[in-house]
Length: 202
Image (tube, rainbow, N blue to C red; front, side):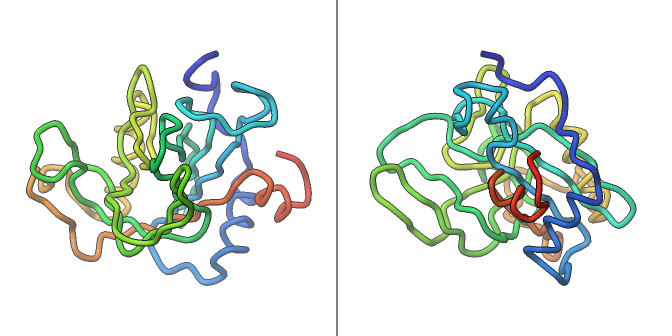
């Protein structure tokens, strides 16, 4: 089984905006990211199942004048007691450093506000967990509950978002908690919900 699909998601921009508008009728941010969990669930891994440790999800960056698609991961990389999966809903990220204070991290998007996660074997929990949106790995998705982008698409993704927010990459450091005001709206749905909104199969 491949780690990354052979192509990027092919959802028309009007359909992407329809899904987002169904969840957030009035946009609140310059940049909105739509995540669709299980976008490739019928063509990657076990048919009909949203797998872990593969980029079988989809992300769409919505700007005022365009929509850009990326391969994506919305799940933890393994099944393990207590590991977190962000539940579907509308969330907020802010520009900042992934892995604060550690050189092993990088400029990314950090959790902004309370998130609700479902922990394997334990149920739902709401709080601040460091559920970030960051670069994934080449041999795995590198997620303990974070949302991740394949490494060969990461710079394009980050540069697109940062540019739209007017943020320069060189101001983000290992000590940067967050850039005030540089927030991104994140809408996460699963494939079934996206299909229900659109009234058709993806």
